[in-house]
Amino acid sequence: MATITPVTEATYDRSRCSVAGTLAVVGEKWSLLVLREAFLGVRRFADFQQALGAPKAVLTDRLATLVQEGVLRREPYRVEGSRQRHEYRLTDKGRDLYPTLVALMQWGDRYLSDGPGPLALEHADCGAPVRVALVCDDGHEVPGPREVRAQRTPDPAGR
Amino acid sequence: MATITPVTEATYDRSRCSVAGTLAVVGEKWSLLVLREAFLGVRRFADFQQALGAPKAVLTDRLATLVQEGVLRREPYRVEGSRQRHEYRLTDKGRDLYPTLVALMQWGDRYLSDGPGPLALEHADCGAPVRVALVCDDGHEVPGPREVRAQRTPDPAGR
DNA sequence: CTTTCGAGGTTCGTCAAGCGAACCCAGCAT
DNA sequence: ATGCTGGGTTCGCTTGACGAACCTCGAAAG
Image 1 (cartoon, rainbow over the protein chains, first blue to last red):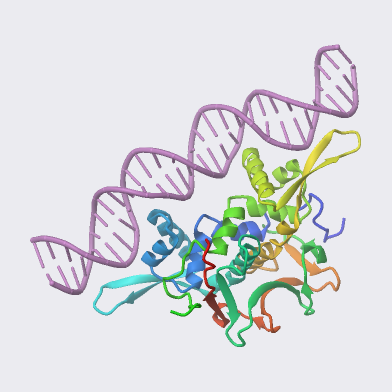
Image 2: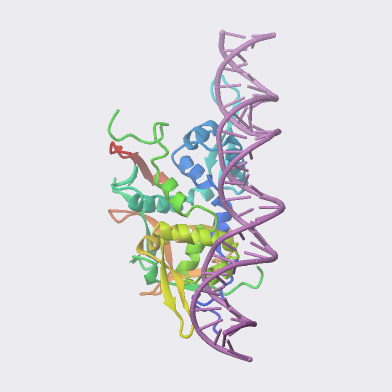
């Protein structure tokens, strides 16, 4: 058996999986919706709460774990004539979840509504619609999973 | 107020959101991991169960809802000298969730492991690595959310 | 024809998570 | 001193996840 084997066999160790890892960070209920709001510019606890309608206790917990995971950062701010408060802002690590959110949105636009979906994304530079796509490093756009081979990388001994 | 307004205001109806809709379909615990396995070629109940380690009752429920949502399809098959059984296969609708899975995987590869991550995707045609990217219809690759403007599309009266 | 076996579930009791309502607390305005 | 407001915490209830045990159908073995 070669050092790299296709994963169609059952030999693949499923615990070494980045999808599961990512879901452990953002896969709880409300987490991804909190991030959606963050990408829309929401920063304050009360605004998240109003936008989502999530229970405060749950929201408190989700924000705390997202901060702990380094996806959001909790920053003090003060409005004129009001006491100091905190706001939650995306980190670079959090911003890198943008394609995930867009992918989810795109699927929903396609299958869950008729018409274009409630939110349109456009390239700030040129105004053209923005979407997620699979691309390869040679510059081809990959239409779907059938044109992709998944290969197991060798386990680096530890973990 | 114009027919199209930026969404940084709090005027946006958050229930008209494709992210939330998609998560209602695949956002429950295990659902996306079931799909990951499906993309890796798993089709039979027992194989899902062994690969994931999820409780059978939960797995039964997730498979049923994914079938009901049209993401998977339940098909009879028979192995030589064995009774007829069912297998779960991706539909086109399910296959379109591939970019979402890849986006999740890519983020995990980047932030949750050191090194390249346990699974490498390559373009079947040319062998080059495959990744998800934000692109605009003019062919530019969009580096991140800061180069994207989100605009609310007009609510089509009904819903 | 009875028994065994294994895939694909279902049922059950327990325990964790999500829920809404009520409450709290610090500081600013009155 | 009284009230208001943002940002929570606490509480009781309900829903969901969990693992172990049990069930079922058809094929094959005895």
